[in-house]
Length: 458
Image (cartoon, rainbow, N blue to C red; front, side):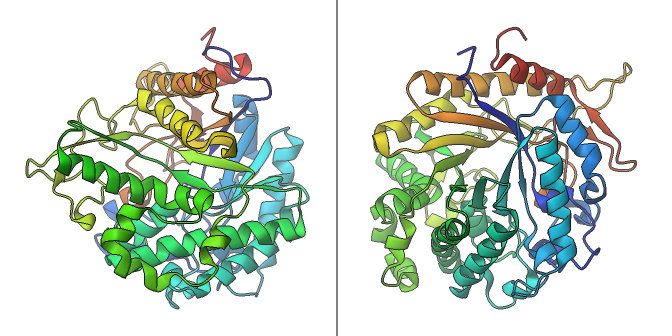
């Protein structure tokens, strides 16, 4: 598909801890990532988000970059500990002032803001009480959502409560490679359930203040497929992996239940967290569905090799091989654009008219392309990747999937969590010593895509 629907929302995305910096300024509280990044061995090179891209001090410059790129929209997250340092009701007004400045600047530049309330930077004070594994987080998050809607809902008309709850649960509490660094499957199930409840509670809280704000989840989705569908072990593994990565949240949101394959084997670790009325809360109406996607996973018979990075096969007692096959990105992830569109079409087939508008809230690739002798960053591999993935989105739209926007990840190179500053996803290059921003050739290419409302003429 060369041209996209009229009013298609082309944008880029970032997250607060990854770009803002100013971690100890203007009353900001300590987050779990401030704590986690200081534990020896948890983050490559001991990198922290203390400075990151210094976005906190460079909002006008960064909005000017967005305008130069021609972005129609910008998806960003707000920092809970910047506005509520201890995650309670005590406000830090300087945090609210910062986000008001950002929002007003975006609107003045003609850029639609899409706000994420939580992109993994939980106030440490709440983690000290159990964090996402403690049911009390649901009410705390609802109170936070109320305050956010009161402060910004007059201007921000699209809000996503939680970014990638799978990562919150399984990277943070199962594999332990993200903050808070817990490795306990039962706590991961608790966190997964509480993100479901917190999304529902936050959606209600936001709409209670501003009923016209559109609210939806943002889910990272990996599409799993069997190398040999006739192999029962592989087929079962695909079912389990799909259930924990995708259907846990999709089934809860649209069907008010959790996948049978997980309940059958792990019910004793799941049911203690579920109370009366929980699954009714899970079925909160959503105005849109945000999907973050980077790769798909081929599941093969076990060869004794290590599973793919960030893969939960071992946690679910699955003896299979998920080693990615090349070519790979700098993250070690396979490049599988065809599966992207197929995954979107899947939900259209399964949900039909119940499927809300979809926004691709993240898609992008890490390649470490530096500034060449001509002063340009000729990141042709990123252009090829984005072209193929956007084409796949177009194929899904042609098949009737209601995709209404696409947000490239990310606007600029930034702090890549436990991988520090070594992985570059940006269409804007960041010199971490000087903090100079330079638009990459992929950024120029994406500007033409936006101007053309599609891939033709590039």
